[in-house]
Image (cartoon, rainbow, N blue to C red; front, side):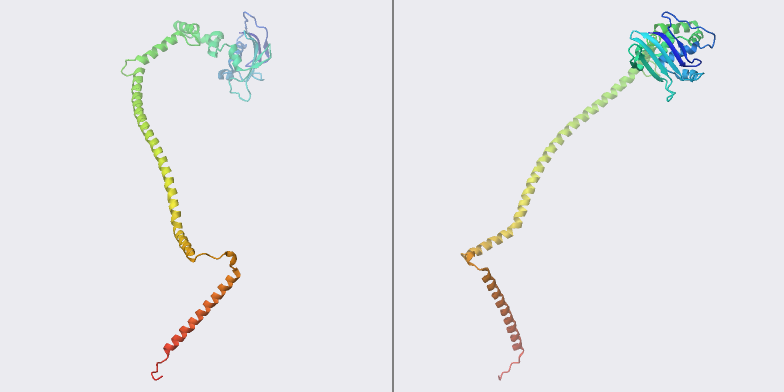
Length: 319
């Protein structure tokens, strides 16, 4: 991927700057101190990786006003693209900002995923150390002695994804010491793992014993469930029989009375035909019987009265 055009809407001292048709092999920007060369490089970094806090604090808002941000045009194997990025006014602290990637040939609009693909997933530290070395990085390198500078350059040129061979060897040595340390003051990782293994083995044995116990309890619970089902069925049968016996006891006296009445009816003999019986005559007979019973009761009362009066009379032998 290479840059073809640059447009700065506002960034630091720059406003409305448009640089077209950058050279295919090399483009040199030159000027006096404080002319804005470093600002231009920091703008390129912001377009690629966003407005980091240190860049935002130093270059935003622009000195001469306006919306902070701009656009760069790049040509890559995927095609020709325009990368636009501005500081989001509603989320000023957002490092990503308002990002848009436009396919200059087709007009399709993309986001950060397409930009990462154009950059081959290179992050900002690699870009700064390998592809965009600024005066600050050179000054930091100049402050190192020969050995440190050589080691730093070796890291940049021999490492993959910012991890150098020296760092890998040191990390491996450190990890090996952590695994196999014989220092009495340090507990190696293998010893910790062995202790952990023994603890887990004991825990597994305890759980296995509990599992066997659980199996026995489960079998007993299943057997108890079957027994409970049988008892419930037996209970239903007994309750049904009890209800039958209760009903029979309630009907026993009535049943005996029915038998006695049936025997009386049989002793009477053959009853007259209901059609030969007059209800009005029956009512008349019943009324006459009631009158006779009332008269008998009155005569009985008179007889008892006369008897009492007779008992009260004095007995005269002469009479």
